[in-house]
Length: 319
Image (cartoon, rainbow, N blue to C red; front, top):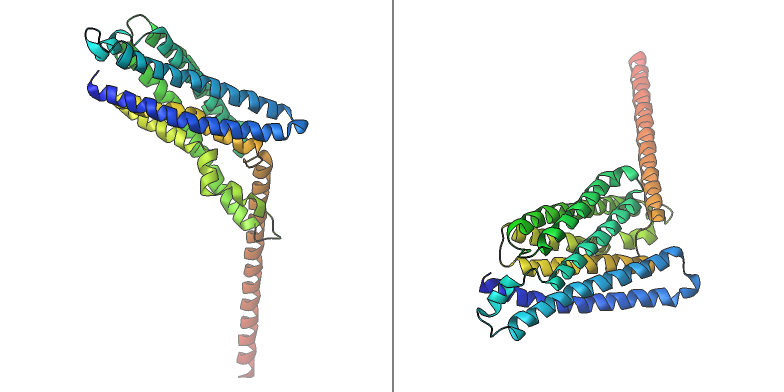
């Protein structure tokens, strides 16, 4: 482990603290929105309350263990033989680091489950989420193997067998993130056409415009989560010492992106199955209108052609 790794670790801890503050604000906004309507709580509201609390609990474990390890490495054991670098090498498998990694994997499991559900919401089709569900089950299995490999005595998350399983695990889970993001983005941009078309016909679809803008699409598709994951995967795959920094962004967005989606859901701004049905209806209406216009144009052209032919015949007879 080089000095670059230690510098990256230091920056990672600082960015963890900053983004943890963002998560606290988002969690507070979510709870505030829920408690303001506590007289009308539904089962889904209670679920999102528990889900948000679980996200906060897990990310707190993750960032706390990273911070504690940094304190132990740079302050408590800095003057021991070999210094902080030796402490890092000898204690990479310490129990609370394994606990932090476990929290991170569980956080992935929860976040990916929410993404798959949001895929279903915007598509309302089990066929679309069938393959992501298979990948999701595989990520759970690989996640358990990765935890075992990195938590063994003398194991290191960034080196050896643990690193090989880690690459396999993160390749699979980040691929799932990218697939979900791409599918949701594509669907919402496709619906953007329907919303625009519907808004021109009797005012239908005007209210749905707020769901198909750039910012809503970025949030609904968890784009920052996928982008941070891709950056981390590349750095981790080539065993770059800067991977710990990208890992910090990925770990925090594993929590922040789902929390943003939940916040939009509880405040009534998220895409719902009703919007999906509305947009599909608008597209069908638009296609029907286009077909009718095309048929009318064809009939008119045929009529004009017949009239022109009869006029030509009359002129020839008079001649």
